[in-house]
Image (cartoon, rainbow over all chains, first blue to last red; front, side, top):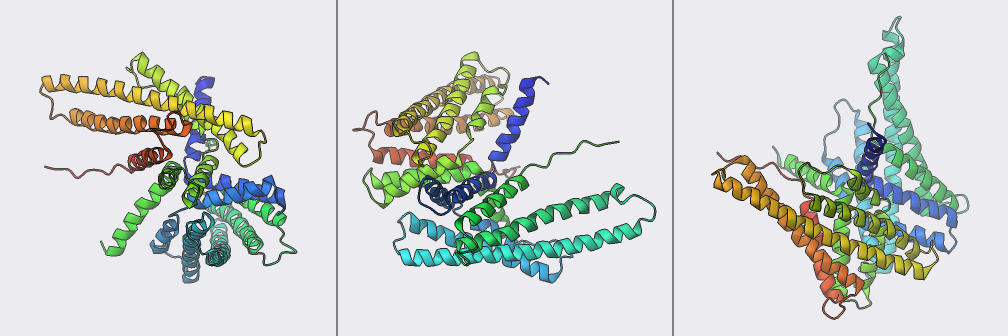
Length: 235
Length: 231
């Protein structure tokens, strides 16, 4: 193709990426926590951007709680151990509650819902739900990685002479395991972000620390949402 | 199928719909213009919601100008008459410029870009671009409707009105009529935002028209369900 064809194809990928509501939300989240980091909790432009982007994301996530409600009532893959199923479902329930309550917080911040105290309380409860969901996600990822590593060891033992990296099944599991490690890092960091927003340890987890962790987890989310490119096969 | 299966399937459709950035943007647009209508331009809760949602949509549309830029450099369907091609490309260029300038307006409103006067000026220019793009869209839709109706008349003469192709054209013609209604109403919204005729197009009128066009957009984004075949 010509240069124009190439840039058009690349632009089409960018367009496809940005058409996802989730990708746009995570980009805004990066802006939000990036400015929280820059502001360090002090008034000024950076804090204004942090607050207005936070409010903007709330209005954009109206009705998003149905996403996790759907996950909650959807069947799980066969063979998932019960503890992991329960943790996964708790995560869905907590995240759905967070997103539902966050709508009321938005109503409060924009002045439609007048009871400020109640709105603040619901805001705190919603953040605890989010923190709980991050804890559940972390545990699920740990559990799933354990399962993956034991099944990978089995494959290694089964292969007597062959190179394990030439085994399709092994490589697929290795890839999944890498993805789950990244998800684990993200959810563990998000626990710190939640603790920061709730000011549970204000001397250690300052707004700057919260901002830095939140910015990194947003970038990880943006990366996770990238389309998986079909890899070029090597002979 | 159990009731749970049905709910799950319905929820899946809603999830799919809400996962589109465009659908979320248009829902927010409905909130924005709905509260503009309620406020009637007077300070209060409704106006705060209008302004906040407007700002929220700006941050959510960062980099969206690439969408229309992509449309601008993409090839058009073969057989499109040159005037319609030019109008379509102008629309892309104007919309892309609007979305690009709107980013600077966001920078200004959130205090990152400090020059207030320049921000206001760029905001007005961006709205004129949007007005222009709505005019182009209206003209394109009228042109395309004319082409469709002439080819449908040809088919009627040839007694092909039962044809699949005829029905497809009829469907397209209905879609384009709706798009025409939307873009002509958006011209009024743009005039309202620019306060070009503040007496006739008051904030309440702007809000009402904007709310209607947002609902039309939400409807247009609904997934086209496969229709049940009639024997």
